[in-house]
Length: 115
Image (cartoon, rainbow, N blue to C red; front, side):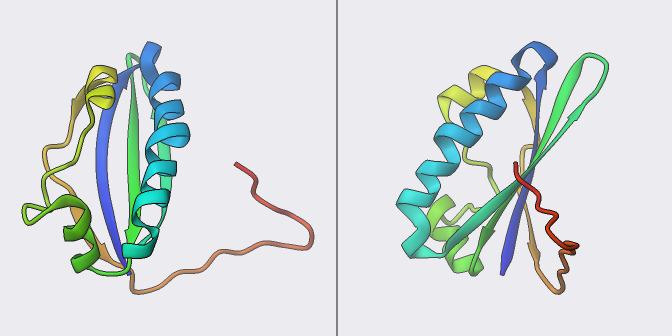
């Protein structure tokens, strides 16, 4: 399992709109278009700072081959839509690709994380 990790920053004023774009448009489109080609889901992190919001996207794929099917041969270059470019104030110019080598998620009793 490969995690495609990338960072982007917005102004605080654009943070909610960017989050909504990712969760309502981009990630559902990835699910529809790439689930049969190795896309397995995402995690999204957000950190508000004084003047900006930092977003970390972790997009999960079966393999680097599946990443290349999504991003092309230059798979370390981020794929950024026009909508995202309009909302971002700056962004990391490359994506990192980590191999998942361990994982644990602990829940207790009836506790659930609903995001």
